[in-house]
Length: 329
Length: 293
Image 1 (cartoon, rainbow over the protein chains, first blue to last red):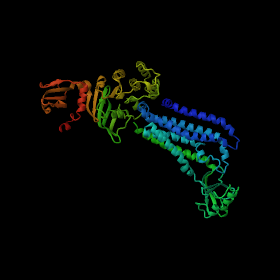
Image 2 (cartoon, rainbow over the protein chains, first blue to last red):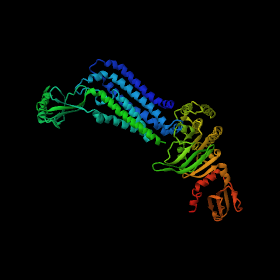
Image 3 (cartoon, rainbow over the protein chains, first blue to last red):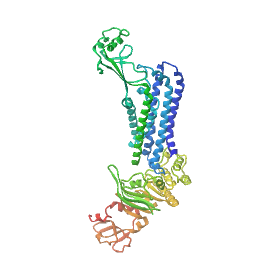
Image 4 (cartoon, each protein chain N blue to C red):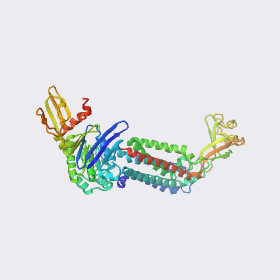
């Protein structure tokens, strides 16, 4: 069974691993250059590229490893050839899934190790930033491209592809459904699940001229919201202004709206520091800023929790595959 | 010894009933042909016997075990599915390797000799084989596994007459050499006549007639003579079908005894005619329904 699995799986698996080696070579060449730098603005392309690679890997694994693994046999009828040798269906699926899962998890792990190593100088710098300029490694997009969660995504993607394929029995349709489902999960989990894996921390801070990082207004010049500095390296979930009674304000009070320059009224940009001074009035009136966030120190606990979550779903899907296997013909 | 025993076997898909209350026994050591019209349940029956499908009702025992129940059972039963699937990306050599890896009882020398005798290039990809060659390859894997029972589901349906003849010839030789039992379905009676010593006619999941081909041919007679009521026939003459014109009556009877009535012109009939008579007169052999006619 091992021979057959390898024979059927070698081209797709070797193609992916060849691509991973190519990526690793690029990272190995450019990586040492990053050590000791304090400005990485010229690395945007490569930084984005590594993140993209880690998002594409599960998609490739699900679509090109998972889906065809069983569906191609069902489509070409070869399942009735292999199921009638002296090997039970269960053993057949166990070997195929085992092989696939192992390869997927190794691929996910390797790419993540390479990227995490490459980006470690960047991550170290972002870990001490308190403004919105750099994405901390715990922040959504980067988090999924670091540490151990890519192993979970790879395992999940493979079994998702297999399960969808076994359900639909048609390769192309199963590929499309797998891709859409995977994209939805990878987008929805960071937005709706990950923030609550651990209860977020809150912190109420005074508004001063120095700690304001952003002021957002609309086209008429009304100030909609302001933000203050977050704890270094934290993932900011909310940055809200609360009134003296502790309620979140929906619009900032008039004394703030009146001290900002209106478009059309002024000819030049406002004098430096005048906006900050204007906003600092909020602090004097008892307004405060409430931060809801996951501190940067929770990176690894959240990584483990999310990995466990994906592995649990993988186990559930695997169980479904074996249940479905009995009813295929 | 019985190689296949089905009792009230049924298979229902979501909407369609593919097999209903099929009861059947097939003896070991024979090449048994399974004929019947499309939708009679031949493929379903063979798929259940191979363990590819699970029956929804009834029981089935194949080579003394439950189909698909484990490696021991799988080793005993070989199955060549409709359209004789093979891995198009694998070479013939790799298919033999596949067989050797997946079957403890694999007969490598048999497989290699067969491939050589069939004149197939071991390095050739299976996807580039002709339909006949592909069927031969699938049969080779089925035989080299050395099963007790080989199930073939319409193995020659897609082949041209020459390839069909070669395939069946080859099957016959393999059966003679290795003494395995074979059950094969087909709707081409001529093909079955060439290789089968036993025959099962399946109509609407029910066994219409079962027995040794020679015996079936010897006990069926076509009688024609002046018009008469078929109820006047002797009790040991079982009527399969009857046709009347204004002046003449033609009946197909099954009887062990000789036909003594001098009014009849007695003719033997070929296997194809015999099978067609059974298939086109689905109610004739059922006494309960015969009354209604």
